[in-house]
Every structure is written in C-alpha cells, then in structure tokens.
Length: 155
Image 1 (cartoon, rainbow, N blue to C red):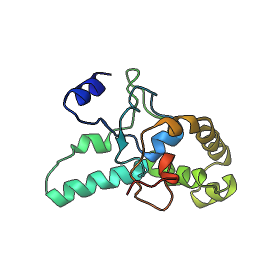
Image 2 (cartoon, rainbow, N blue to C red):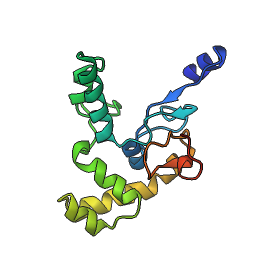
Image 3 (cartoon, one colour):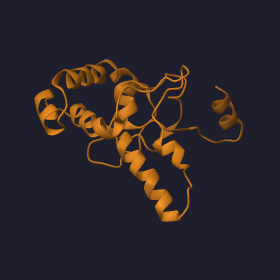
Image 4 (tube, rainbow, N blue to C red):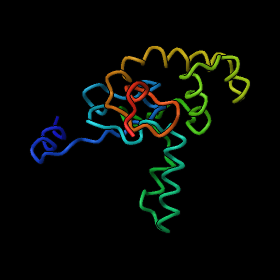
C-alpha cells in the first residue's frame, strides 16, 4: 500500500517483479508483493531471471546485481532459515512446459524428475491460476505468455 501511495503521489507506477515460475507456483501474496501496474519480468521463468542477472553483470563488467542475490537460495523470507522447496535451475523450464500443456510423463522424462514431483508441480500450477489472473499484466517476451498477455499482448 505504501508503494502504491507513493506511486500515486508522484504520478508513477509500481512495477511488479514476479516471474513466470513464482506465479505458477503461487509464490506471491495478492495485494502484497503481487501488486503493480506492470510486470516487466513476468514472462521469464526463474532460471531465465538468474541468467539475465548474470548477463547484466557480465555486460557491465561489474556487479550491478549483487552476486549474493543470484546465488542465495530462493526464499519468501517468511521465517528464519526458510527456503523455497525447489531447485529453480532444475524445475523452471519443466514448470513452464506444464503450464502450456506438456504431460506429466513427458516432463518427468525430459527433465529426469520424479513423476510424483511433476504431479505435485502440475497440481500447484492449477491451484494457483487464480493468482496469475489477478497479477499485473506481463510484458510479452516469448511466444507462450501468462496472464492477460496471453490474450492481449503488451509488446
């Protein structure tokens, strides 16, 4: 609410920083960290966000984005020592494929994941679709986008 108030007072907009993987897994609070008028990286999965961060640092020949942010384990920071239960480098692409219709069996085989783990990922995607529908519009960067960007691309 504070960010929205500040943005309103300066005639600005809060930019959302959720990515495709976090949205699919439901890692975000409606009217909390999912607020904003636009999602700039919402069409990138978590692995691609890490890759983009590394690229930005390499391109600038310095740590524009602190390395510790890139290498630390992801966490919602809701409790001391709590971390997300996924290796995003391993599952981000699998989650994205599940979002767009790949079968559990196909994904399990392609990414050498346990079939029960993939079923759990698919279940989370289905359960959290309501958050994607309420999240800010996503800048469309790829052929397969999430949210309103699937219907009315913002390019």
